[in-house]
Length: 521
Image (tube, rainbow, N blue to C red; front, top):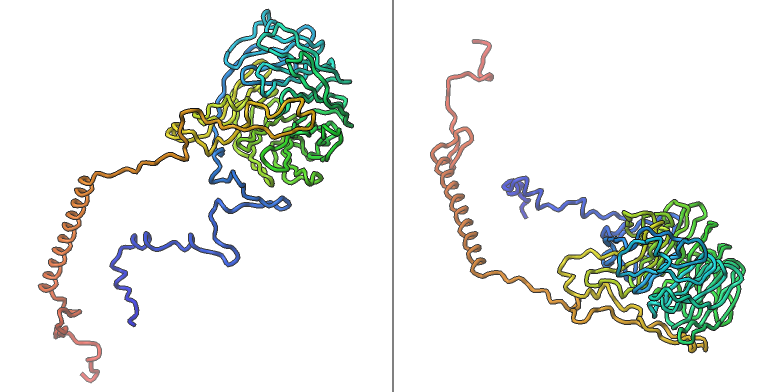
């Protein structure tokens, strides 16, 4: 086989070599490392748990990676007594500062207003003799509000639409009430906890015009936050211990210390992620963090994620539909979100409010989301004088909004209870009902038919004919240049190098070469 000629390669310009020759740098594979895409490579910090790819929220398929935030102001000139706020699908409630007692201001979500001091008390629910520290709306009745205050009382307002009616007393604790939460599946079941560690569950059925205690108990430390999980609840206590309490037996099922800092923390069950509890609090070395705990091994923290270097209290809400944990520090204007799985916590982008700093916030029910506008999360922000609405939408093209994006909005909790308070007290504990949030008459994005653009054959044929004609002209020009080159070569033979098969002739010019000299001459 003949050796490859370098002359043939020289026919092509250097620019062609640069375009066609593969870059060795882009295809180089080291002996100790296999090639993988940049998105698949992860950086592991020594001492940390290895990163596990997210089952449902990977970097390529996670639709919540890019969210846009919007905010509007609902109420101005408010004077909150304590940093606490709660909302249903029609109303919101904020403890109001007045000369005495513990009034709770009631506002409507569909109205923008300004608090007039002379008329403020007419929009307040009365009944407490001291400041109200906790408020909670029923998830199944928009106008049913529970309140707890420094007077150790738990009270119920059956219809906040008429604030002139005084609330009814449910029961009392030995110290100030700090936590209230309705059961997410059982109707009229309320959990309350106080500063002395006591807790109780109540049947607050409005049709009975009275309330009955179902279970009671007491823990070894003050309770600062509670979160339901069927027949158990997670109690965040002042002694830095997280306790899971079985309300039927009153026993502590398990306990854990999720944070090393001394400040109060908040723990929630990460529903739809098996055996997981998420807690936000202060770290041992300062700053604030998120901790992930597996309830099967509560002694160890599975994963941690740093929130920031601040030292104040941090509030949180777990959005089970999106798998996001929303966090906001008390006194901050920044909201952060974390994507969570059973083994990892990944911080997402942050959003900064243009309004005043937040003192408290609460999530709005999912039924208030505008799913056709790709709105995935909506909440209320309480400041020192206003109530603001913040909403977050997935960033997608406009053609997506003509369909129901079923890859984002799955089944959500139903607005109807799965059992009654009596059945729940008797031992029944079914899971929450779920329903679709797809509006009637809308089409699913997954069933969208993508229309392929059909090109005009006439235009295509004309384009091809024009390109063929241009190529023919180029070839004819090249052939003409080659003919001219041959004619020039035939008419001008290079005698010094030979040409056209004729040997070069040596001409005698009469000059004497150096080897022709003779000294004898």
